[in-house]
Each structure stands twice: as structure tokens, then as C-alpha cells.
Length: 522
Ligand code: KIV
Ligand code: ZN
Image (cartoon, rainbow, N blue to C red; front, side):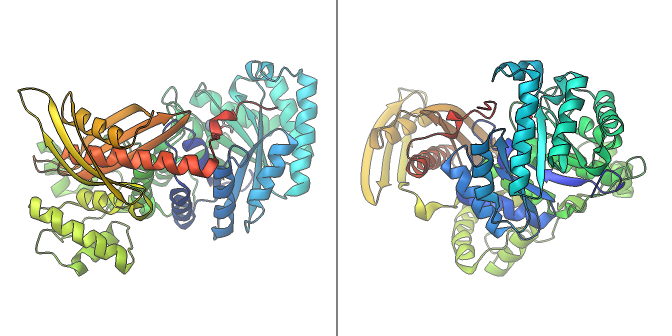
């Protein structure tokens, strides 16, 4: 496909690379495989699966995703050096359709970091793109911080990359600095003025620092770009990347003024969004476009009245279009296994029999405590029990005393590597006492960088989803858990995050991906 294939826009998802790069969004190996599988199924054209040289974990994930992908092109990121590119190829070569994505920062600020002159950098680009192209037929090249690169130099290096064999030229707005008019003009001018530009695909990669990532990406398409780089829920460094669900739905809903199409099965959006929120620990804000809890909720009387008469009065797209299905099955303590299976399937979860049995037991426990079990409760149930069998640390029981007089006290029993151990600790409130008890049983130096409580549904019997983010020696791990008891959910989330720190330490033997800066080109 080239820029002259006018209507089709390819979707390049970088949730597993740029998205995962946001501090605390680190995913486990299995979670990455699962998300890649979902992206492939939903029709994403290119999955940027990771940055293979950054860590052994990234390398393994990109290799495994490459082996499993059915239709999507699998892409790995590499800086502008031979070692990075070779490592990237080692990982993506297993894919039916591999791609190497190599980049270098071209703006004055970025050129100063490796201390390269313009000519030296131009030579480096020629050498590295040529090397990548000798390994792989499908090469993407990015001038990082393109939107702050001098026009003449940008046009020169794009020309070099095209001549060296790149078939996709990505124009990143690395710091979210551009605006829609400029975004469209930059792509249009590159296509018009760089020789050979009509033989390659131009891509747009926008960050959301000024809240314009979606608008900038769509403007770039109007300017001639035919690949949008984006992430699920807009996950990504700082304010995030362009949100996949926003650009895809914008083109679908406003086809009259944006006559482009993608191959995304939009009915899968909601499920993928929820899974990414859960595994990354980055909850979606309630009023987030397309996938927020309130995106299709109509609160005011006038809106509700209008909706009842004709949904189009206040809805520009149908909830079903993004996979938000409402069924008539109300779940409660009398609901059986078949109803649970059917409800979960509507929510996008196809469980194996043993998984269903496990969720069913926990569903019954919850239904005993809660009159009505909502969709959100079920999702929390399904996702809260994951990975338990591999966990080294488990909460066996917890009893907490707290109130207006004196310190809170937590009696905790845990299983650590199969051994039951117990501790009693006091603290400033029940959560503090509980976390102290966990630390007494599993001493660690992890710093708590986030503790967040989120009511899954309304009512005093609502489940609370608790997110805990820990940092230790440069690692960041996030744990999430849900329970009608906030302190129990907190204890479990804390332990999930500790288990993840343990897994990461075992996997990478103490080295951390952040030791390799992706802004470093040496
Ligand atoms: O934002 C950016 O510039 C990037 C590049 C590595 C493409 O993510
Ligand atoms: Zn980026």
C-alpha cells in the first residue's frame, strides 16, 4: 500500500511498546501475549510488540508474539545502531510478516545527545536503514522529534531513509508539540517535496501533551499519511499516545468528512480496552471518549427522555458498535453456570471449563454478599483471579480492627512459597497496618508510588478495585485486586505487585530495561 491508496488507513498499535513504556504500565510476558492476540483478532495491521534490545523480557515477548501472530505484521523497535537492529531482527524474524522499526532523534536537541553533526547523523541513517533492509523486506524509519526538526534537514533525512530502503516513514510528534494544521501541512509537504515519497507510506505518531494527539493524527491523514500509530486507551509516556479507539471511531462516524476506512472490528474495542486497563493498572477515566464508563451514559432528564424517544438525539454511535452489549440477564445468587458463561461471553470472555468453575465459585461468594452482580463486578472477578497458581506470595486470611480509638491492628496469615506464616502489626489506619504486616512477613524495600481505590459499581456493597504500584531498584510493578472489602482488596493488590516484582527479578536477573534509554542512540 502507498499514500496513493487513498481510502485505507493502516492501524499500527504500539500499546506493547510506547504504551508499556509509561512508568508503572509494565505487563507480564503472558499479559503481553494475550494483548497481542486480542489486537491481532481485532484487525490491527501492525503490532509494535516491544523493543527487543531493551531487556531479555522484551526480547522474549517480541519473539513469542512473532511466532503466534496470525495476520498482523509484527514490528520491533531498534535504535540507529547495528546491534539493536540485529537483536530486533532476531526477535521478529519468526513472524509471518516481520517489520524492523529503526529511529534516531533528528531535532537539534536530540542531535546534541549523541553529539553527531548533521552529516554524521545522515551517514548513520543511511548505514542503519540499509542494514535493516538487508535483513528484512519491511523497514520503518522514524526521525524522532520530527515536528521540532528543521524542515530542510527533515526533508534530507527522509530522502536518505527512502533511498536506503525504508518502506514506511513515520513522522513522530514525540513531545506532543504540534497542532492539527501544522500536522497536516508537514505530511503534505514531505509527500510533495521529497523524491520518492509517493512510493512509501507516511505514518503519524502523536503524543498527547497538549491534548491534541487524536486531532493531530487525523489531520496528518488529511495531509496524506496512511498509517496511524496509536495505543489502546491512549496509554503511553507522559500524557500518552493517540488513542486507537478515538481515531478509528472518528473515521467511522465522520466518514462524510474523513472518507477513510480501517480494518478494525470495532465491536472488540471495549473488551480490549478493559483488558489493557486491567493488565497495565491504568484505569480509564470515566469521561474518556469511546471507552469511558460514562461515554454512553445519559444522566440528565432531558437526555434520558430524548434517548427513549430516539437514541440518535444524543448518540452519534451505538454502544454495540464498540462492543458495549447490554443483555437482559440479571446476575444474582440464583444464577447458574450456563448464565454466567453466557454473560461472560457477551462481555468478551471465553473461559475454559476449569477457569469458569473457579470464577463460578467466586461469583457465588460475591452474590451472597451483594444482591445484584453487575457486568463490572464480573469483569473484576474474572481478572482478579489471574496468575494465582504461579504466585509465591498469597494472602491466607486477614482480620483488621480499626475505629476511632487507637491504632488500627492487622492480623495477617500468608502463604510464602507454600509455608504458612503470620504477623500482627499496627498502623495509621487499616491499610497501613495491613501493608506493615505484609512487610513483616516479606521484608522488602519496594516504595509505594501509587495507591488508588476505585468503586466498581454504586452502593455501599460495591466491590472496590484497588491499584497498587511499587518501585524497587528501578523496577515498577502494578497490582490490582477487587473485593467488597476495601482492605482485603488492598492487601491482595499489594501482594500481586510484590509477586510481579519477584517474577521480574527472576526473569531479568536484576537488569532493568530502563537501564537502556530509548533516547540513547549509541
Ligand atoms: O515518540 C516517539 O518519537 C517514539 C519513537 C521511538 C517513534 O515513540
Ligand atoms: Zn512515542
